[in-house]
Image 1: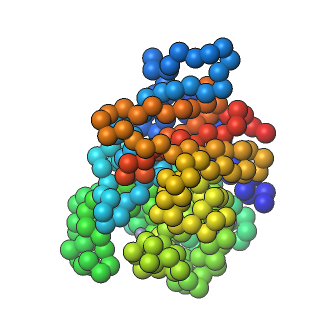
Image 2: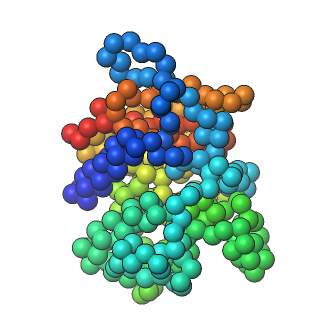
Image 3: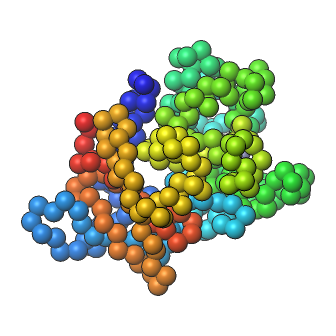
Length: 291
Ligand SMILES: [Zn+2]
């Protein structure tokens, strides 16, 4: 569990830094919007903007939930041009791109895998823009590809990972990922036993970044992203303890008429994501401090 602990600490540190620097898109924007608070408040109310439900690490993209303009990431980079993000694994070609933030998480995962002797990963596909998705759809057809705007690859949070030694079903790389990807915030998005839920065939190569603690909760409960979001919508609050850090995940129904009031920690670290439907999910860690 050493790897899990490290992953949790790294993520928490990033969250804490970003929350403090008013990161566009991923975090609520507190300045000027905080409600009047009592002395020593533990939480405060901020307003999530009208597009918040369409952006963030938890957005669901499928046949009925296309990528919205607000959901497009603004940190997509060509990995081939970023050697610091591509050591220890291969790229299918020079066009493979990904959210830089996600690529950093992947690099941490690849480094841990390498330490376990797993060193034949290759990323076959990452972010695809509209034109690339259109081309793929035209070439492969609707049985094997999704139309432009309806694929997770159009987000920048997903990647197809292969092994240079065997198919992912049989390769040590696939085996390692099935055991450890969740520790780094990634999920196997289309599992073999969940095709009825996802509507997508088993894809042992397709991994999606959702971040901590979400990947841990989904792994523990055996949930797909669809099932996790449905559980949040129904239960409103879920908690998780990941290596000594306690997280709370709260679901809000987005106001149909604009901004939505959400409660966030007064001082601690938090992230905000939509579900790409009518939900806004606030994830906070206790005190925002390392244990
Ligand atoms: Zn894929």
